[in-house]
Image (cartoon, rainbow, N blue to C red; front, side):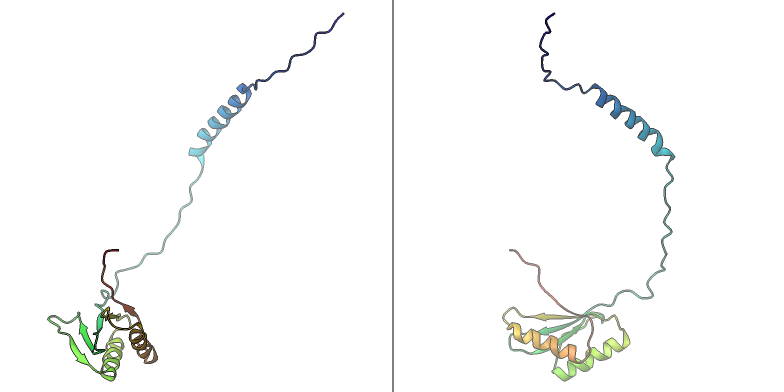
Length: 139
């Protein structure tokens, strides 16, 4: 009796894998609607007691002259001030409203050092919420 040599199979039978995947798909399709969803009770808040305050703009021109513009006042004009007057005015405004923002608008020809010195002056005098005002431009 002669035995024939076995031939190697170079194919993979994927039918059992497909059967398993279909069974798993059916199980998930049936089980998903039965899952309970979690409810999250979020805290609720009322309206803000007051609308956000309009910022006070501090303008610094190329001659290092300071002026203040309070946009909250109707028909407000920029008013030239000294450093001491500026600090007093901003501290008074923030004493009335702690959330009063202050924006520094410096001319682009002003040295960076002058803007930093102004910000340092405001910080040393406890003026809060200081930001920089920039103009949107092309790149």
